[in-house]
Image 1 (cartoon, one colour):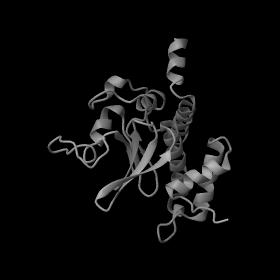
Image 2 (cartoon, rainbow, N blue to C red; image 1 turned 135 degrees about the vertical axis):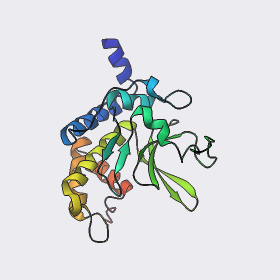
Image 3 (cartoon, one colour; image 1 turned 120 degrees about the vertical axis):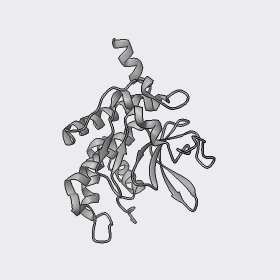
Image 4 (cartoon, helix red, strand yellow; image 1 turned 90 degrees about the horizontal axis):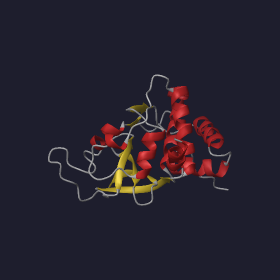
Length: 212
């Protein structure tokens, strides 16, 4: 049993640690939500489930988790429903045919509105934010690992949940209070590395880059 545990963890020790933090955050702030170990056999899509995604569902295991998020609520599907989430992105739901303008190495793992999704890249095992602009999908690297993605989006969802209507101003822009609160949350979770936490929030559009 010990050998199996270490074999799983050696895939990437840092993301596993982050996945554990994500699971703890969900259990603390979303007690009604479900997380569960989900085996690779639950994958309904073609081919083999990438190792990083297998780790996500083995060590975090969201079960159709809906998170308060900005700019729109974020949904993390169960592994059984993950292939269904690809409809409209990877393939045409009416014909099953794959779209040519979508990167075949990208698997949608979370959706925040219709034009903003997070994808796992099976080549580098990093997570990108993908937006639809000018008739094409544009991918921007945001998270260095699947574990970092899970931990950060859950942590930021807690900020959204706590602040409610005070998260944004009348124009829908993130308030300074929200940015500061998010920064402190990530500062604690990311090894008290303020530069790294700040860079993450800038990439996500939660705060503006420091001009100094």
